Length: 287
Image (cartoon, rainbow, N blue to C red; front, side, top):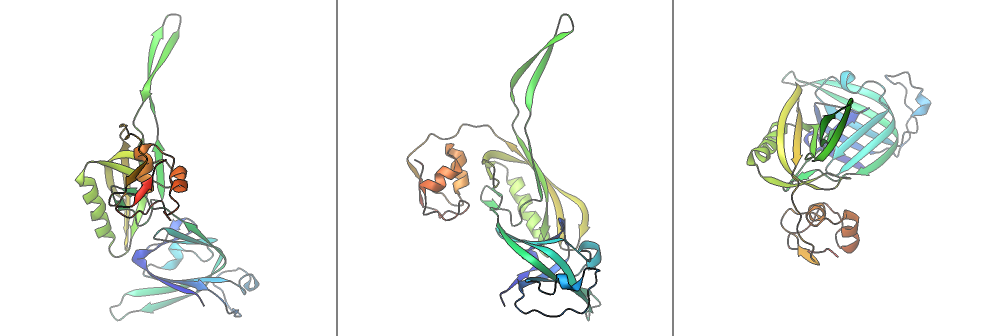
C-alpha cells in the first residue's frame, strides 16, 4: 500500500472548499484491499464505497462535524507545490481520544473513489515563496478618466492613462508555527523596497508590498490574513542573448525583467525542469 504521512503544519486540508483547522497530521494512500464496511455515519449506501480506491486519515483537535461534515463531496490536500484532490468521498468512521492532559483528539477516516494531482507554482516575491498559495487573489485594473462638460448637455471623456495595477487577496497560514510564518511575511513587508511578484498563470510584475493584515476569527493552528501589492510601471532591462541567474531568481522573474514570454524561455532552456526553480549562476538563454 502506497502511504504518505504529512505533518499538519506542512499541509492545508479543505473539505468542499472550506479550510479545515486544527489538523495535527495526515495519512493518505491507496486502498489496495477491499473490505466490507458494515456501518457509515452517513446515509450513503455502503455499496458506493465498498471498492473505494483511496483513503485520507486526519488526526485533529477540532470537533470534525463542524469543519468536515459527514459527507464531503471533495477533500483536497495542498502541500509544497502539489495539490491532491479526492472526490466521491465519504466519512467511514470517527474516533475520539481523551489524552492525559485532558485534551481531545479526533481521528477521521475518509474514503474516496477518485484522486487527481494538481501541480502548483508557489507565489513568490523578492525570493520569498508562499508555502500555501493564497485562497483568493484579485487583480484590480483601472484607468484615469477625466470628464469635461460641453454645451447642449454633452460631455467629453479623456483617457489619461491607467493606474498601477493593485493585486490583493486573502489566505491562511497553517500549523503550530503559523505565528512564525506571519512574522516572516511581516518582516518582508517592513523590509520595504520593490521586487518581482510572481503568480502562476499571470505575467510577473514589478511591485511594492502595500499592506498586510490579520483578519477573521482566530482558530487553532490557523491564521487568516489579507495582503495587497501595488504594481510599479518601470522600464525593463534591454534584451541580451543570455544572462546568469542570480540567487533566488526564477524564469518568471527573468520573463518580467526582459519582457519575454515564459513559454519562450521554457522552450529556449530545456535544461530547466521547473520555471520556479533556478540554480544561482545558471546560464539562461533569452533568444
